[in-house]
Length: 96
Image 1 (cartoon, rainbow, N blue to C red):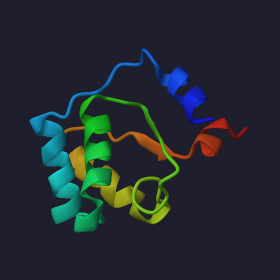
Image 2: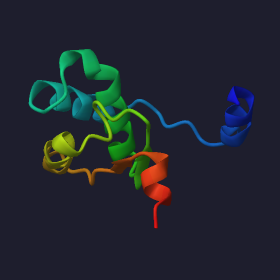
Image 3: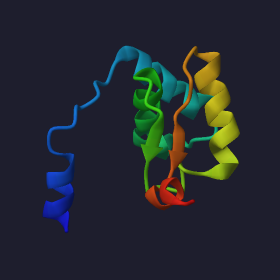
Image 4: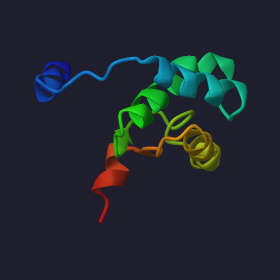
């Protein structure tokens, strides 16, 4: 299964960690809902927002696809001038 997943993403572009993405991540931890131990999760959110990704698909429901944190995450992204990504599980995206 791991090999199959790797084959599915082969050739997809890798988004750069930019200073802007780092700033978003820092704000999500310092001013927002994410704890310091979730800095990597905050960076994923920041990278997606800065690069204008419409969706972030994740199974991480503790810090990324978390309905209780969503409004704060979105507000911080918008305050910094970025439209936040829709953060959901793959199953949620495929629901009809």
